[in-house]
Length: 227
Image 1 (cartoon, one colour):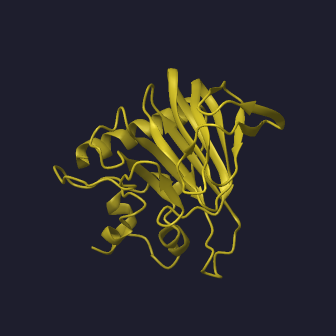
Image 2 (cartoon, one colour):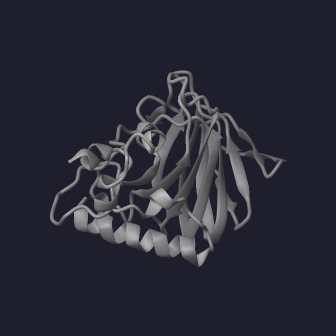
Image 3 (cartoon, rainbow, N blue to C red):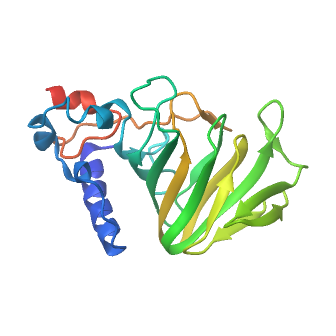
């Protein structure tokens, strides 16, 4: 993924959030130069918990078809007692036919919501004991408190305002149809390094080609602010 693409995509993400009158925290607007002028001790929670912008192409190099844009507003830590929040919150930017590939979380329960735009579409499977797709067991989920039972891989469509709860070890993939979706995630503590299981092995964070100066710092590269 090129740095120019990252810079431009986050510019567009700011505009997309404004379209839906989403007010992001102030660190969503800190450029690299502005970060370097801050006292890092004051912003240590943002840095330690990797809050902020996150763009991934899952290592495939085709962000528009296999990728996701995120902004993490809140998170906790299961190991650092300074950050004992038991929850996390993210904004998700889901493009039309842009897939977040099949995965589950070992520990994290999460609600995925459609806050506006098009339809948020997903396919869902239970996991087998050996962490493969269970093609026989039906999936029981809660959609806004309403129990729903789906056949393995059956398409679930969330319209704006709807949300679904995924228990741990529930395989899911999702994408937008008709128009981009402003998605939202409310979950238990998030740890992208140890809690993700992709059905087909993928890279969680993108390799970056530095074709222009850094404008926006991604959540996994706060080391850049120290110069």
